[in-house]
Length: 187
Image (cartoon, rainbow, N blue to C red; front, top):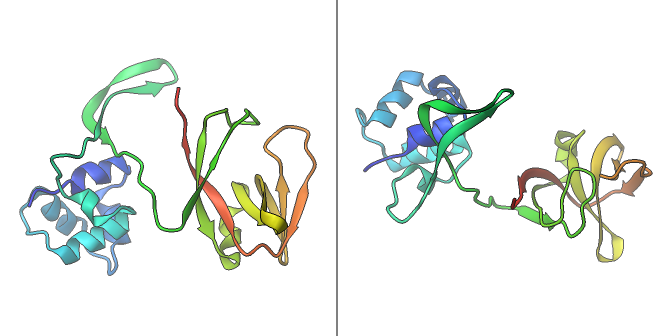
């Protein structure tokens, strides 16, 4: 079986040691290296462990002839576009369980018309992970509030709108909140 473990690991900007430590249970960087190079057989169990460590689906670690990855041809630096020293690939975005999206119809703050904002849904116990990040919060009667989560006070969430000069809003005891994790923008 031809695997893409190395390509995915590099696309995620992780070292062999990072992946080894993130595996459950942890393993060694040498073992991950052997699995990447084919010196050791990759079982389904290993694919599942490594995919969880990399935050991708196990299917993303296996070559598929019909899947197209994007080759990275340059890197944008402070001095302009420069060639890469080593070849690299970008993985196309894939949805994760529990994700929701927000589309932007009018430019506001950092968001432009036509943008898609992908969000990971969080339970109330996880709201602390979203502090100082943009979140989508449900409100009564099918309405929503989107803004920067600046504080929590018990079950109340304090949000600033994405536009400058807006007033803080407070939402009491929302059943969930969704933190923005990916911006998809067509240029």
